[in-house]
Length: 362
Image (cartoon, rainbow, N blue to C red):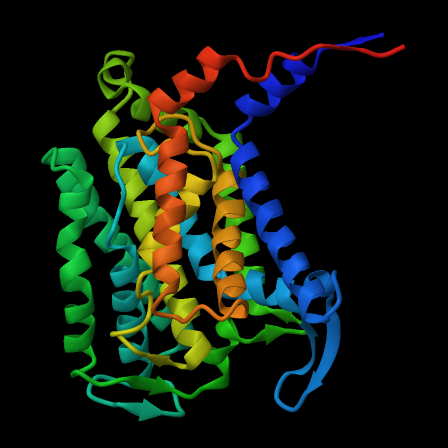
């Protein structure tokens, strides 16, 4: 029987999920080696247990649960960032700051303007949460207007809110950290039974967006515009409207991520919520096998990429890398990913034909 390994490798190389899956496996391998070397048990990384707590009852505990929980905000941002990159061939660097603004706006409404700390809600919970999400949509609409209607380069256009959104959030909160010590608000960053609520929220929105992209033509339209906006316009698609919509959706997910982040700490800390998360979102899209030049995208790849980034962060801390040094290692990963996706590198491996192997098995 003849097995053409070259055909198998070609199929693997064409899959957009190859890069994120390989990256995740490498991260897990590093954890296994580290745990075995320190005597913690080779597979303690995968261990999940039930622990009794005083405030939340019995909850799931383990490094994988922690990664899924802590990586929820980055995963939400990666969903919107994937659509933006695919449609406009550019990145939205304002998502971290928009997170902060939405959290501040939500907490300001819930606490009442000028109030720095409260146990009682000034407005119904759904009003504050909905307002935070709408603020995200408004920020996304502003970015989309600059990119789609005024043809400003995405990074330059989103630089405005990257610089201004946190300042606006601080103005809304009177330069204070607004505390909303209310159990109903804290629910979004706490637990639903034994499962962390952020994991459930992220899973719900992943499912919703996946269904929309599969059951409608939106995903195809976004990819078509990203590949060639002029050809898409000639074919009858409103390219500007599709790009604008992608930025609105990105802003919406930034707003949801901001509400989750503020709920974790039951407060709006404008200076720290979403800080540097735009880098994680962009890196998640790149690590997910998506081209930063726009076009075809893989939502699953971006999700895997987001949790891989969180796993890398958790691993770096376990290896003794400080919080200030971690971004350096992430930057190195970005350079490697971009280099791998560069046309000259792809052309080099294609020219070398490294994967053309045949083997005969009796």
